[in-house]
Structure formats: C-alpha cells, structure tokens
Length: 127
Image (tube, rainbow, N blue to C red; front, top):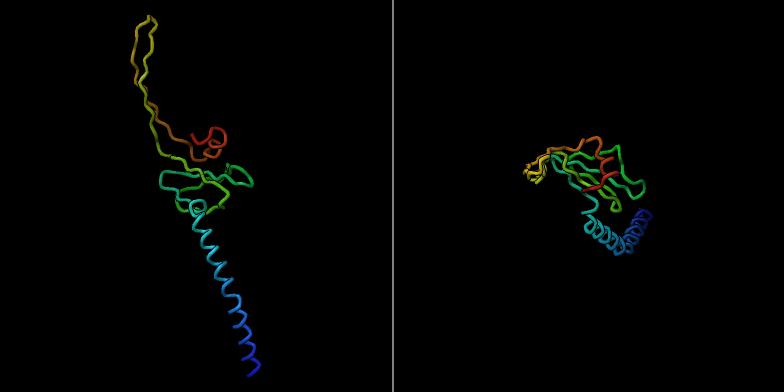
C-alpha cells in the first residue's frame, strides 16, 4: 500500500513539474489556431464551390469542394467561385455597313460548369 502511495506521489510531483510547460504549450497552440483560423477554416456558401490549391501538389482539378465548412492546412488556399447563373451586360456603339452608328445592348448569361471548375482555375484564374 505504501509503495503504491509513493508511486502516486511521484506521478503527481512529475505532473506538478511539467504543469507550467503544458500550460504554455496549450496556450501557444491555442494562439496559433486563433491566428490561423481564417486560413484553416473555410466556409463555402450555397451557390458557390471551392477549388483547393495545395502547397505540396498544386491545384486539385478533380476534387471540387461543395457548400459547407472545410478544414485545410494553413499553407494551402481554397478559392471560392460563384457557380450560379450570372449576367454581364454592356451597351456598344457600332457602325453598320452603310456607316450609321447603331447602339446595341448586349447581355450574356453564363454559369461555370461545376466539374470543370478546377480546370477553369488552373487555366484562366480567379478573374
């Protein structure tokens, strides 16, 4: 009984010795997580999709991230695209065959294909 009590005492004394180190380590990890939370946790909202760029392997073409919470490494990046139907409109002033000025209102509706989003990011870019 006395040997078991002495063994418990040595465990508690070791724990007391390492307590400041453990607390410091815990606070350091907590600070790092709080500092890098914007680079670790990404939220992809409805109507959007994400393309993952990895520091180690580059753009992941096959894996497209759908809506929700996603955790990635702090050295990686998740690019978020709007995959809903979008519209671009512009008014152009052109010349006809006879030389008259004609105003044309041009409107284009488009939507990026979900499965080709990785290739779009790799070949065209974010814009």
